[in-house]
Length: 184
Length: 349
Image (cartoon, rainbow over all chains, first blue to last red; front, side, top):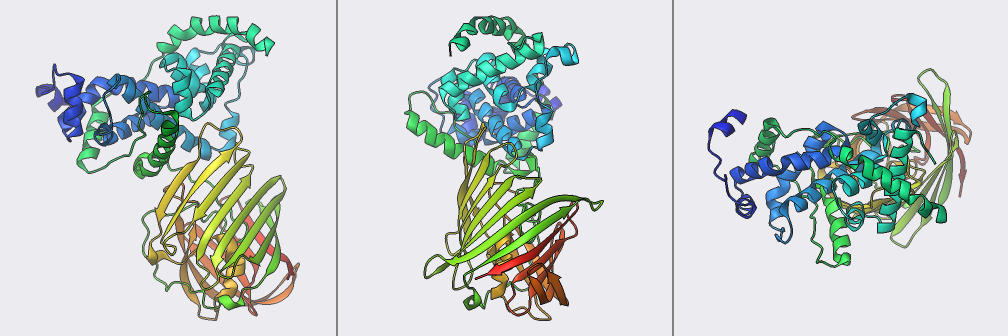
């Protein structure tokens, strides 16, 4: 499949997103594949940063593209398509986090407690991010890495803007504690 | 509050310092196999209903309603094969079929036995049954003690209300309250509410179910209280007639009084789950009278029918008083974490 794709000419090469969206909306597999080629990297990125699991992130991207042609019928093409699609992926990833949070064993949750650096030596930023609780990590990822506003983050997480701000503060505090040992 | 603001500057400096590194953190690369899997899924007819990401021009009220519905739909309709099935003891039953109802088998054979019929509903009456549940691990060490009270009272001329209150005394504390409304005529489920506190990392979880269409479906919602990143979920599930009747396992000790048990009794029914997840809608069980025994429990000495209740994940042994079918003793010898025994300690009218 992969080889065939590279050998065959891309029928949407050089076309704009609008044409791809229109064709994908109509059920074109080629258009859907072309959208994957253009946007999968960004979607995998946001899903992975939220879920911290390659397999889960791929499942999210799979679900997004499998449902995309139907969702596109509701897409009004008002803003940037890439940002809209990333928001959809973030929502699907967050739904998965909720699902996991409900079923995750309590012991596993305890493993995520935050420990200052002096207890376990140096820690990388990636490891520190992984140690954050899903709720704190979600706000940090969406706000600081993906660039969503607090209003957008609050909407995606179904929390208030104030709660989003507080979570971001706590997330940064936790990262700071883990990375610098400073827990003031 | 002042302290919070005083500390903002170092925090801002810190996040600004690490932001480039945060943005540069590696993430997986898209690959052809994932692309092929997506296209194959589409080709095979798979569909997922996704949450929309409405644009900023819509009103906040519409956004919130849309988000709530979409969040519910994505949980319900993302295909089960791509979701991680994490079976938990969501419905740790206080009374009969412990760990059973959390294990609905999505593709199950139709029941081989005839459906259970509540033909003696006129025998239901107001009462309170008290039970004690003792749990032991696989080495026989005692691991828990619960006290359970089930109160039956008339709700209206057409319905009975059954309230089950399960209090974990040790290691606890844990309180689990379920209220079930059943039709007086045929014990059909009408409404069910469950409140568990605490529930995993939440302070409380609440479930509200209704059974419209004469019981051919279950609809409702679930939410959590306490630290949570999630909103509630709504759900709507079909309940296939072939697997009827549907019953909450907590009501078995009382509702079996409406079943004419006899030596060769054998029937099928289904235990209703929470309906929130695909793998927790209902679980079919088979009930058989295996023999007759006289047993002694704290509430007294009773002549009983000994029943086996079998489901996909195992079986429980159940003793029902011969005189009226009241549940007297339940033993779950097949629990993953050991055994559980429930005994009747008191009956009051």
